[in-house]
Length: 314
Length: 314
View (cartoon, rainbow over the protein chains, first blue to last red):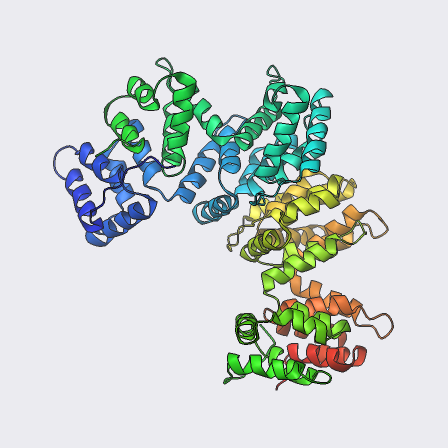
């Protein structure tokens, strides 16, 4: 379930005017901007952008980029974008990093629904004049390329049907591959990139039952290879995306070395989806509400924005 | 341009009634069925199916399957389906063949537009409760699997922009790979499965300019491997789909050994798209109108249906 709180009564036109006022004159009224944007859903934010452009012949995003700064600016920028367009931006930012690992790309391709992933690929075309898989192919190579391209191009079947026999045999196939350290076997890639999520979850359960421990834990942690790292993230995202997101937040919310990018990404992308559930997983795992951790590790307008998205009442 | 001729005035309701009448009593009035269905576009055919179901509480497709037979039945069945659903059926039929080559699958993935291919994948889910790439992965292996999965999962950029420098360097890469007989090099697969069609056409032109002959002709014809055969079909479809379809028709329209399946497939899938252009290519290449060749090689209601789709006036 989503966390953001949208008031019962408001007007898109007034929202645009409020934001305009907040941007005019000396300084910027960040609180007013949070009070509006932090409490509107994707469709409403799109309407506000349109209303703002109609009223003032100015692109709201460009104006906010001028007015805001730092982590707060980035959070607002990420939040105001249409979800598919935002994911296209996140994927592109990730692919421009020099690292050979691209965990955010794996996260996007494995935690979004099949239809959402298609929309992201469409948004990628519109924004970057090339395809997402083209970019991935250009930036990676070998087995990692094969796995990543398979993940971003997948359009997994989304139904509930599970083939139990297949789950058992593929759990065994995965076990054999891991035992022989053939993580890059073509059938490992095939299983992870083409099976439906329900089917994969059944397969991972069979694996755990047969081997006594989870598949992600059976991958070597000392392997420095980007391929194994990519495989691990994919398995964790496909297995239980809420647990995966909880772990990203837990690793990012540290007083020393807070990872603002990761916190922003998870909160912004999940606030309209399942952040309520992720909050519950977080509370259970850390014996502390997620809001408290965010409150401890962030500050200023950035903190206020995150807390709004986490469901703070108006 | 399309070939089918749709009359200016007609009523969907009356169409459904006409078909019903044609199916009732002794025998079937095939001519009446062709006069209606052979002259309605995809949207109209869908409406006729719906109107028929509303009027007679009977699935029109099932009724026609009972009434018709042979090549004619198959042509009507293919034609009446929604284009994306039809391609899903064609892909599935192809994947159930025992052969290791799947030229029809390559044809579907390389000659449809990127958005059309997404619709086909969606139709595949709905009809077969699994993904198209899952089926392809299960039925193939090794390098052929890698190429085929890449082709069916591609969502190529559809714009006109061409990077000339890239076209030159990739033409050279392809040449090196062919010279060294490394047809399955990962970069060959990458180029063919991720670049936009405009980009690939520029690359193939650069190849021809530099090497003096086309890339498809430089692939060894004696190679019995399914991989090279798959690669050749992909290159021909991506290079010039109209020429490709002309060749399929030319090879199928033989007095001895007519390939009705291929003729039906090309005429049915292109009649609302570019069959007029394919007809022109055919006429130039064979000094004979396509209609004449079809008239010579087919007969009966099947022939009448094909000629209707080829643009016979009512």
